[in-house]
Image 1: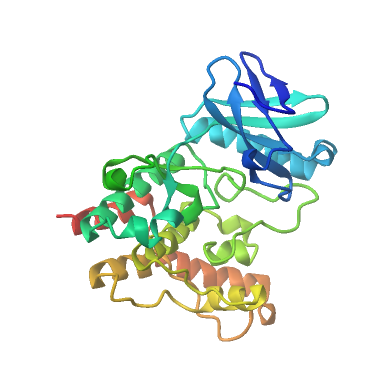
Image 2: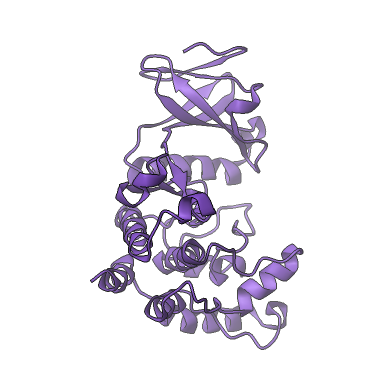
Amino acid sequence: MTLQNRLEIKGENDTYLIAPTDSASVLKPNGEICSTYLGFSEKSGRKVVIKRYHPWVNSSPAYFWRVEREAQACTACSGLSTELILSNGVYYLITDFIEGISFNDITRWRFHRKLRLSDLILLSIKALKALQRIHSAGFVHCDIKPSNVIVTTNNPNDIAKADVRIVDFGMARIPAEPLQTGVTKLPFALIYSAPEQILNLWELIGYHTDLYAMGVTLWQLFTRIEPWRTGNPLKTIHVQLTQPLLKSNRVPDRLMGILHKCTVKPQLAKPPHYYTRTQLKEMMQIAIAGRYGSASEFLWDIERLAL
């Protein structure tokens, strides 16, 4: 594979090629701790995703821990070829590229119009089975959202038949894992993160955290719109913490009940800063007890819709 201005990253069993200055190769530029590129294996020519971590990450234990945790989770959960490489003082995480379209893409009319309600339910089942595999490996993904759920086809006519994979383990954790030394706040994604993430209650992070995010993701898959989006991030966080998913004529009542169950949140009468951490934790524990306890329980109810 020939690339202009290419950079070679030599791993244990292969050499990987990227062109950091080629805009077509850039998947996510200048993220918090890395930039993400589309690259290639020199041996086979297969496409790979290359995360290039910022050099300062090496000397920051709190951030380098995230690099190591992502590599561990990706290896354990994804079933993909994964390699963490140190090259010229910079760390690179290499994983196989999954060809396909995301759940976010599917909400666009040109894809969605090809799908029946039964197809969307089938995709939901496949997504939950993918999440089940992550949890079986002992990890909480912590970043479930439509752009991270991939249907492994580029053919609009094959969407319902294709496999579903979950990608990007950059925020993965072990359930109830303490914050690392020097870290004071959990990362979270607007719209999709569970309240325990947003409220920084790390000791309550568990499989139910991913089930909440999957519930929001599936609601968006069926409705084709984002919930709770406002023009102001702080306002978005407020409505995300306080408002339930809205009913929609695109979501059958039985499915809506399932999605409400996996997205139970505490009823905050006041903004979070008016409560002590202990009070927030107690209210959050009550809310979590109202959710599904496992992906298997969530999956069971979704599968019954397909009958």
